[in-house]
Length: 302
Length: 243
Image (cartoon, rainbow over all chains, first blue to last red; front, side, top):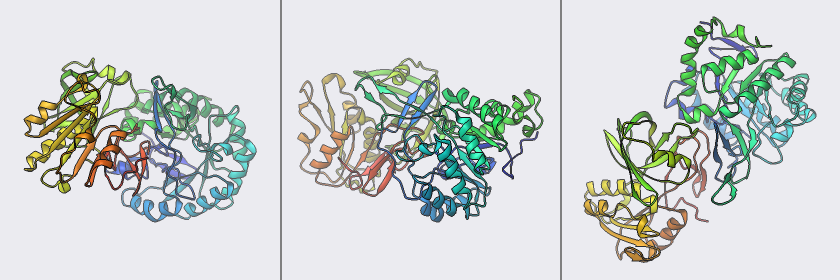
């Protein structure tokens, strides 16, 4: 069974990549299983400065999903490089995806240029789609011009492949993806979470302290699949698909829609062994559908 | 942390909207009082975290309050049901600084982890003094269970319908060596302000994963941010910021 895929010139043993924000910097999960079974993983969204994030409650449950409003809590890029990456090196020998966020083009450039120099980093995943912070994140991902500007600036300081992570909270995601491609992006990943909210019937107030947050989980899978399909038909660069992937079948469906690799997010938070179990069940599921090589099914639905 | 399947042995109401569930299965991953179990319920995405009230290597008891659809669903679970559980989660109570006569204060459904703690302290030859605070006589539970451990127990109700009328801080003893508490944040703040010693508090927060991955339950403390699920739920009184 062929599970290998190539993402922006780097070969992965399999297409499964735990998504940023659901896997920390890896070692919580390395205590549970050997995370070297993963294709790679995308580490916690990292910014120039340390961030505490938003007040709690940050989490709400929804039908077939969850809302989070963590707000990019992270120790800042310098500590990630001096503390987190050395710890990760002891438990993970494959290239890792460095997820980066920022509040200005300069911040993206600063953080990316530092992480680009780290030997363990295989790709930069530039998050221009966080719905949970003001004055940054998603504002770059909702305008083709701004998305292109961040892409160009980051590309000018990075030697490693730059993957731009897009938000689904737009009217035309294809135009944003194309702007990133034209500005030199090496890949596109999608989708970040969908803006949503819940209200507590007892208090009559929003459950989430910041009122709204990002919806993820099985509820968003069909939306994500549709967007992966549309974007991968419109661009030539590889697409990393994510959004509600919970099973090997979901991975295959995402790849058929056009994803070269697939990120698994919320599933890791509910079943800590989810990514490992999806990988181990891939061969049997491939066999059931007569698939011998995953690389061959990318975009066959087009 | 360990993922195990536990079997429901017993599930019954013990006070108003408060249920006790006994689970059987491998529980040797539970190490300290104050740790919690995260239970997957059919039809719900997120797991539900509950403090362990009592445990041995073969099983555990939890006590839960019915507050929403998930806990309501739990009351329907019959003996024989199998539950997907993550066990041994969180940083529990440290009994080392307790001294010989620690004061234990449980508020409402914050009481269960205090029971597990009392049991451990008694096994270490210490003499815990227990204060349990409830709103009304209908909410009171576990008074006798604590007495059977050999603890001195004082119960308060805010409306005076049972025990001493008032709040937990009205009945603090003259002498105690340390304190441990679990309850609402306002109760724990009162405890902290009344107490003459250092102590440990068990915090509650809405959680995503329960094992430190999602940062959904982070709180600010005097020693930086802490994930309630992984660095807590038990924090020391010198760490917690009361606002």
